[in-house]
Amino acid sequence: MAAVPVDLLKRYEAAGQEHLLHFYPKLSPTEQEDLVAQLTALDVERVNRVFKTAIEYEKAGASSAAINPLPASTFETIIGEPEKEVQWREIGLKAIAAGKVGVLLMAGGQGTRLGSSDPKGCYDIGMPSHKSLFQYQAERIGRVSRLAGGASIPWYVMTSGPTRKPTEAFFKEHNFFGLPEKDVIFFEQGTLPCLTMDGKILLDKPYSIAVAPDGNGGLYAALRSPLSPSDSKRTPLSDMAARGIAYIHTYGVDNCLVRVADPVFIGYSITKGAACGAKVVRKAYPTESVGVIAMRGDKFSVVEYSEITEAQANEIDTATGELAFRAANIVNHFYTREFLESIESIEDQMAFHIARKKIPNVEIPSGEFVKPAKPNGIKMELFVFDVFPFTQKMAVLEVPRQEEFSPLKNAPGTGVDDPQTSKRDLLAQQQRWLEAAGAKVAEGAEVEVSPKVTYAGEGLEGVKGWILTKNGSADTLEALHLLQ
Ligand code: UTP
Image 1 (cartoon, rainbow, N blue to C red):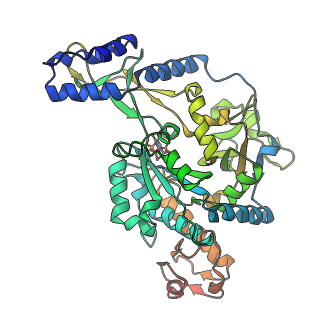
Image 2 (image 1 turned 60 degrees about the horizontal axis):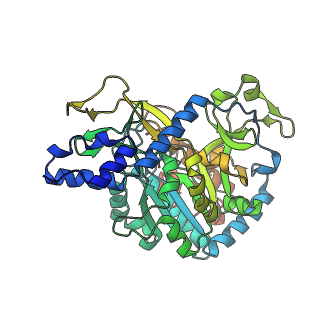
Image 3 (image 1 turned 180 degrees about the vertical axis):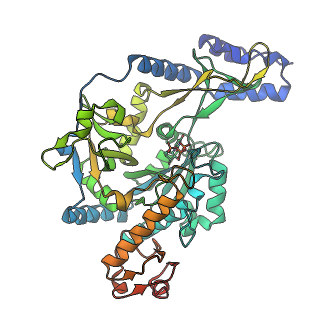
C-alpha cells in the first residue's frame, strides 16, 4: 500500500484541508491514484482564498455606497434613434468583416427551472421549424457573417461538467448547423469544491471531492484554462489572440430573440471606447424584479430591486420621462479581449456568492454517506456581472425588449418566461418584420422566417403585397412565397 505522498500531505496540512486524505490508507491503488490526481490538480490555496473573501463579503453586507442611476455619458438607447443604429451597425459590420469579432455563449447552466434533461440550447420552443435555440443562434451568426462579406466569426461555447458532452453531441449531430466546425470552439467552465459551513472541503466518495459548477462568472477563469486535457496549451483566450479577435459578444443561451454578434451593439461599444458593454432593456414597471445596471458609489453594478427604495424604483429621469433605474440586465455583454485578459489580476478581489445547500457527502471519520435534511454546506458561485465594479470604461445600450429579449426560464405552462412565451414573442417579431416590409400575416397564421433570410428584418423587400395564410417556416424567400 502506497504511503500518502509527503509533499501533498504537507500542502494540504498547510491549507488546513488534510482531512481529505483521511481515508487514503484504506483505498485501493486506483482510488488512491484518483484522489492524488484530484488533490494535485486542485488549487487548494485558491479555494481557501475564495472562501475567505466570500465570507468577508457576506459579513460586510451590501455596500453602503449610495446607489445612483447610470451617468448619461455611459448610456444610450436605440429606441427612437434609427440614425444612430445605422451608424453603429456600419461600424460593427466593419469590425466583423475585418475578422475582429468573436462570440461567446454561456451554456453551462443546468436549466433546473425549465426541467428538461437536455442542455437548454437543445430546446425546441415549438416554432413551425422546430429549430432548437442553438440552431437559431448558429443561423444568426451565419447571416451576420454573410452581411459582413463572409468573414469568419468564431463561436466559443462555454459548457459545464453536466452540459459539455450532450452539447458537443448535439452540434455534431446537426453538422454544426452549417457553420465551419473549426469556428465552433467548446470549452468548459470550472468547478469549485463544496465546503462545510466553516470552509472544509467535502468528499462525495472516500476518494473524491464534492464539486459544483462555479457559476456563469466562471467564464473568466475558464477563458484562461486549456480547451481540453489533450490540448493543454490552447485556451479560449489564446485562440482568440491567434485569430486576431479584438471584440467579443457574450450572451446567455436561453433568449430566443438574442441578436448574436449584433453589429449595432458591437459598433456602439467600439464607438464608446468601452472595455465592457452591456445591453439592457427597459424595466417594464417600477416593481419588476429584475436587476438593473446602476452606480454603487463610483462603481458600475447590478442592483437588485430589493436594494433600492420604493422612491428610487419610481424615480423619473427628467431628461427622458422614463424610470431613472430602468436598465434591466439581460446577460448580454461586449468585451475587448484586452479587458478579458486583464481580469486575472482582479480575480482575487471578486467575491463569490455563497449558497447554503444540502450537500450529500461522506462523513469523516465514519465513512458514512449522508444525505442531509437541512443545509449542511456551501456552494460558491461567481456571476458574470461581478466584473462590472472593476470596469472603468463601461457603456450600456438600451434596446427594445420585444425585439431582443424573451428568456426561457420556466417549465411549459408557467405563463412567464416559458416555451410558450418564447414562441409567442419570436412569432410576433417575425410578423412585425414581414408587415414592415409590406406583407400581411393572416390572423392566426404561424409564419416563421429563418435567420438565413433575415437577421433583423432586412432583406425582406420582395414580400411586399404577399398575404401569408399558411403555417410554416421558410429558409428562403421562395419558400415564404409558398405560404400565401
Ligand atoms: P441562469 O442563471 O438563468 O441558470 O443562467 P439556468 O441554468 O439557465 O437555469 P436555472 O437557474 O437552473 O433554472 C443564465 C445563463 O448563464 C448560464 C446559463 O446557461 C444561461 O445562459 N450559466 C449559468 C452558465 O453558463 N453556468 C452556470 O454555472 C450557470
